[in-house]
Image (cartoon, rainbow, N blue to C red; front, side, top):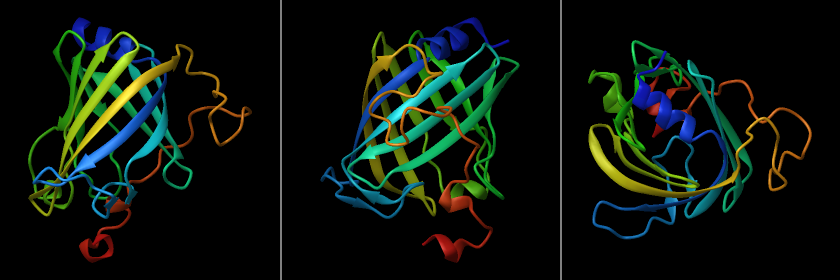
Length: 194
């Protein structure tokens, strides 16, 4: 079972969220096209985010529906010893964890620093305040900071088991899909990701 605070924070995120994502360069200029992210493409863009948490298992599916071609990605994680541990994002991917950072606050970050983090690292800091949620990230590629990301989310529904009307996949079918590999971890050759 998750620590009480971590479980409370994860439960506070259950539902369907409409996220608006914007990014900035290291010097603060807006990013209009991002070649570095887990899913490269233009900014700003919008996602639907379906989040489930049953006290042990966390499932999140992001569905891009505005500003970029339709894309979906599902993440799975489980709680062990009060820490949320994500399934690896692909071959040779490092381990990501989630920890409580205070009431309504969560960090998604590396479990430890190793060579895999040189390829891709994007720690997330989330703030949950009722039906509003923000997520701030710093993206590192090849050990260098390349961009920040700001996500502003509004909860559309408290039930994540049904697709919402805005979902480009249509109303039928489960909101969550099989876990997908992040493109930077699709294979073990660094050159294929530049």
